[in-house]
Image (cartoon, rainbow over all chains, first blue to last red; front, side, top):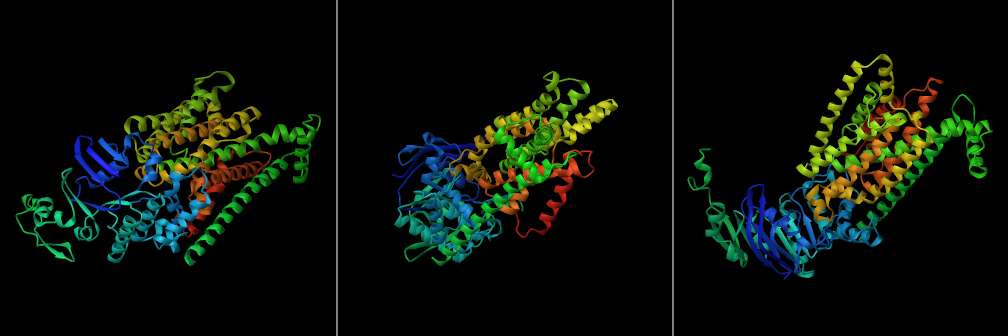
Length: 265
Length: 351
């Protein structure tokens, strides 16, 4: 088993964000973490590669993360944050080269440069190589950051809302790439996703998170039922099956059934 | 594949460009130093300067030779101090800006300079200090200028301060120390006031070989450490979470870099007084020319600072010779317009 979480808890100040999360994930799969805003999806991702310190146990390839060196973790786990705020301008090439940091001394070796060229080409962004990262569109930036994570040559890839700033075409392109990485390189891809239909189409497994707990986990068709969607989001929805995958159609917002009306907005 | 080839060529060209610019800057240091050594009341030509230096290198120093004495006792110390101080301030500025992810960070905005000023003022006006005798002013300035670093260090250690909190607390200290210095100046006698004001303006002429030795030792201990950490400086520009995910510990790196850069600044300021502007502007100018990769930027900013300070000192000495203007005035006078020009005409966004 590539990744195992046992009773993982995380508190932010006094607020309990993650409450006793346990799960095990196998290589070569795409796992989508779904759930409402602010339930701890991003926090869960950040605990996996110890960006945030959690209680409980997390095992990366049967090793407890607390005992591991950061550089070692960085060679196993790539991470794509939700936002990248770069103050000083930096070229796309340099940005992706940072993904080689876990392998480098001070100077970049020619094989590291080759790796960066290769990944830029894989992502189809070689033409952006010397452009200023800050001047790219949101979608292009997202691809650059994914390229940086791939430059880490990870076995596990964590993506926090990777599809948020992408248009429809790029969303599908990125998801297809994730599928390819999972099947060809046996990478374990874990991402937080808001779009349930994209999760349904591409994920092997969906984790539905509510109030710091995993409400249910499993194949999309098992998780995405009208009952689950109602209990997690408070939204009535129809679920159709298209080509063997569930397809969620939210119904019109019904007054009196959500928290919004209670506060007299 | 074709795109990769184009990128590869462009990348190689850029690398070559960087190397050339660095080479030109280093050559400029020697050129400026040569001109600076030739200027003064005793006329020595640019060519003769190198001849004299070569002779000393080969045959050793001969106090009987007037040219050698003038160059070695009077002129060379300020030129060497100019190179060291400019280099150190340029490096420290680049480190502060990188660590705090803020284009306004510099020894001035972090309170380091004004703390040194207060230390010197206490020594000069009240004759109060941590050391006595000859090193009263210098020692006081040094100890005081490490205070902001300690405050910021403790904020980070015990309050988990973010870079924003650090720079804001630096600005807070800048005002506190500044106000205390003003109070002392207000109460001071005429003579002490004049000495104080001149000290604050910054001057390379106070440095003799002993001071240069100390500065050189501190720099040669700190600079390799900073260069070694410059990769982490790049990663810290991405924010703490991304830096952690790429295998570095931003809290630890930030601490090491802040303390090292403060140490460099404190050492230089206590021997030269306040030389503003280089720490702020040198990194920006180099960023415009060379890009933001700190592995090159840190060193380049230092080299540029050295060129710039030696040049400014030269201007100070020739503009109304034999009067020597405090160099701090010229660094801002010459650097300000250059900086504004680069900001206005630049094509890319750099911060």
